[in-house]
Amino acid sequence: MFVAAPSKTLLKNTVADIRRRAAEAGRDPRKILIFNLQTVIVGETDAKAKAKFDEYKSYVSYEGAMALISGWTGIDFSQFKPDEPLKHVHTNAIQSAVEAFSTADPSKVWTPKELADWVGIGGFGPLFVGSPETVADLLQEWVEDTDVDGFNLAYALTHETFIDAVELLVPELQKRGVYKKEYAQGTLREKLFGEGPRLPVSHPGSRYRTLANVQKDRAVEHA
Image (cartoon, rainbow, N blue to C red; front, side, top):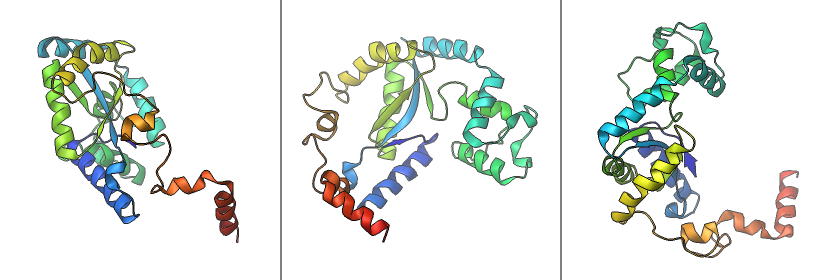
């Protein structure tokens, strides 16, 4: 399952809620793997990573970021001044949008410009900048503190972000024993869960392997 929590607190709550709901539905909570959206900017050193981040920021378009946020929220942010505190704009849509971002920093007063800076690199998820050691520390810290299973990497720049992750970050994670060194055989499901290529019998979706069960459920829905 892919989620996009911008803060550690929100991610921890989201993961716990998903696992709780799974258990209530009779499923094994550990059989649901949860991956959070994550952007990493990695350099050989913290200083080089910071320089790379500063360069990326210089290319961020305020208008482009506003268009992106407007598309996400359904709110036309062009009607607001860049430095206008959004907490003073009293509409349900604005309050809901700002609340989502405020989970990352509840004390922060958001403006359109600050929202643009936030999503300008990597989108809605958190952003880690640093050396392979620094970023690996942060990733492991988030796994330990939130119970998330892994990360869905976003990119700041195609394809440089992924090249840096492969060449700089992955070796550090492998050295720590938290990233595979070779691919396992089998389907993606087998790689992720170490079981067979199909849904286990315990999974609700497994009953739909037969057409009879599909037709039975459709008949109940239309009864």
